Amino acid sequence: MPHPVLVAGLLSAIGGMLGFPSASVSVPLTLRFARLVPIDVRDGHYALWAVGEGAPAKLADFLVDAQERPSALDGKPIAFLLPADLREARLFVTQEPPGAIERTPSRQVFLEGTLHAGRARLDAPIRLRDYAACKGVFLLDNPETPNDSSDLNGIWFSGYLSKRYTTGLTLPEAPDGWMYEGWTILRGIPLRMGKFRSPNDNEDWDGYSGRSGATPVLDPAGQPMPGQDFNADLPPGIETGRNRPALDGARVIVSLENATLAGEERYPSPIRIFEGTVPRRPTQDRPYPLENVLATCLPAGTAAIR
Image 1 (cartoon, helix red, strand yellow):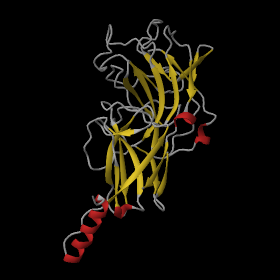
Image 2 (cartoon, rainbow, N blue to C red; image 1 turned 120 degrees about the vertical axis):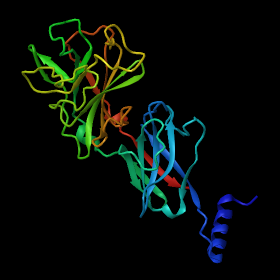
Image 3 (cartoon, one colour; image 1 turned 90 degrees about the horizontal axis):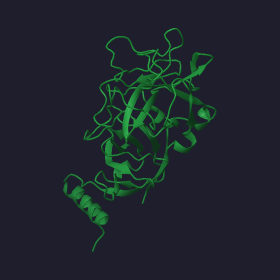
Image 4 (tube, rainbow, N blue to C red; image 1 turned 180 degrees about the vertical axis):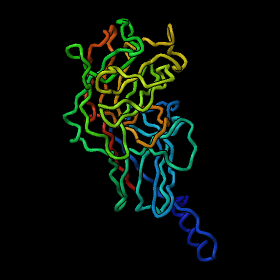
């Protein structure tokens, strides 16, 4: 049986000789990823794009498993095909919100590279050496009830020394076009904590604070610091008591996100700088360590035309 790519090429040539529009010819593309975070399809998925001289063309929506093997959104095997006229294209991978069917890429681009001689290296937008010495801590508190030592319903990127709150993260200013974002993964559900450019900034979102006025500040007399109270409007399945969750056992993450995303992010980017865990029996205002995981989490990839 003739090879389908050869048949398509023959039809394209015949169509051109007869004056008909050329048939579209595609070539197989092999993708390999390293340190790519699996996403539950309910939280979003990845998309591969190619751009030459025109608008970006979506090649596929896909997921990856724990072994970083790509699959279709239904979990079945996937084949990546590249239009033959894009053999020298720029490839990039985005993170898309759940159910996205748009034909234009989200602004959450975190891997990109250009095909040369049929191959491309896909790199993340930051350099590992810029973050090698970064450290972090977080603590549990809730500024809404500052005198309640049992109120552990907020997570803040802060230290606590001599009864004073101190900056909890050592980070450079976020790169142009990007912002840091805090996340709490509670019972498998991602809770965004808002984005910030510097560890001495408040976050840009306080949707779980339950306040309609000013953004909560951990220490009104001191330096602003990013964090989030979990008081209200929480997703179904995690409310307890007064709409406030027990945070013990939750994972705490600081990721790098596209600055232009306006609440579109539903799950932390694969570019993760810090990770930590709330202990089973936490104490208020006790700093807990965040591990610098960028060296083991900075995604990368390769693409090759077969």
